[in-house]
Image 1 (tube, helix red, strand yellow):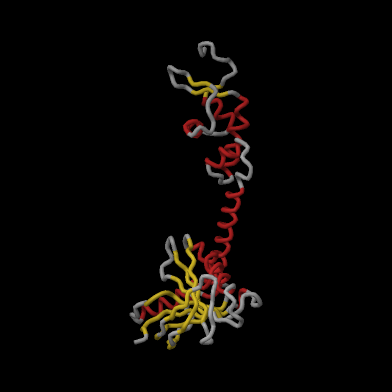
Image 2 (cartoon, rainbow, N blue to C red):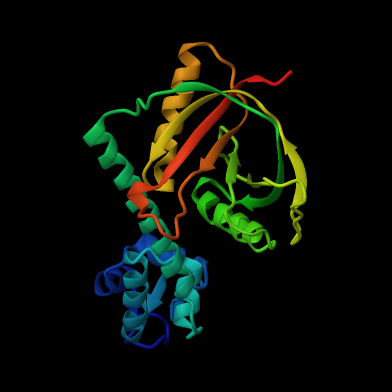
Amino acid sequence: MLGGVEEDLLPIGQFARLSRLSVKQLRHYDELGLLRPAYVDPESGYRYYRAAQAREALSIGLLRSLDVPLPVVGRVLTGSPDALKAVRDGLEAELARRRRTLAALERVMAEGLPSAPVRLVCEPARRVAVVRERASGPEDVGRATSAAVARLLGCGVAAPVRLIGLFPVVLGEGVEVTVALVLEEPGWEVGGGAEVEVLPGGRFACATHVGPYDQVSLTAHAVLAWCAERRHPVRGPIREVYVSDPAVTPPDQLVTHLMICVEEES
């Protein structure tokens, strides 16, 4: 029937049913070099497979059901070690993000939309040591902030310290995170790549957030809404003044002041 081709070959439709894949998927996997047919008729272009290839086809289907990208599937099939580690790490990161989102949603369900009391405060200019870290996007801000804090605290300044995080109002791709350490004493000096700058003073809309750092955005929403209602233009980054020591304070008791400049110091 196939002009001398082995009789145990299966046409693509029959092999698709055997391997629980669609004909379209088999053609796509062939184009990618992931699962080649055992034989392609040179005249008709029909693809034929051996039954022994069903195990590989089913393995592809299994891995795809586990959200493994096709390039990684190919590496798994060729026996590449640790091919699935990056996929697992990505899924764990996504799961952690979803859990944080769920926790924030539950807080909104329990307490309503954020409406933290906002007050106006005057802040003087402060001499600070700053370090900057690049975050790949909003989901990477927590890591970048922790890295910046670690760099600052490794500069040799004795405790207690006052840390301030500075974040763009809009968190898009390529976010720059800045953490400032207030230099309380004139003689304090820092190393480790930190730069000494002056953090501008002015009049700020301020609200206090109590709870995990990954829910600070809820209180930031309340401050931004307060500013918008009063037509205050948002000047500069959002400041997070860290009051609590996270090393000894439970996450739900962390105190952070959220500050947005509404009038710069003249």
